Length: 66
Image 1 (tube, helix red, strand yellow):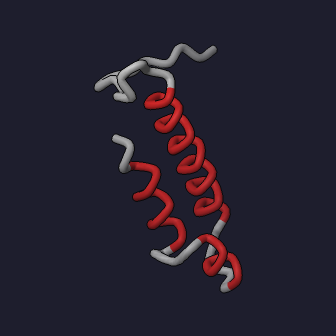
Image 2 (image 1 turned 180 degrees about the horizontal axis):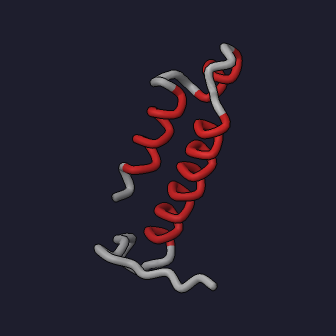
Image 3 (image 1 turned 90 degrees about the horizontal axis):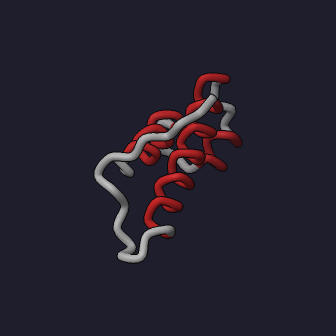
């Protein structure tokens, strides 16, 4: 599901770049939260690929958070 961060970001910015959406004051609080989530998910997805010897991420991953 590494496509999800891109889908969240596109929805939040209405298809524009983050910079253009911010310049045009198009981002709501919810949009900014979705952008932050998208960035965090993209970083996690990238990290999952980076830590494996094969360069492949697992099909399913569970995160234990308190």
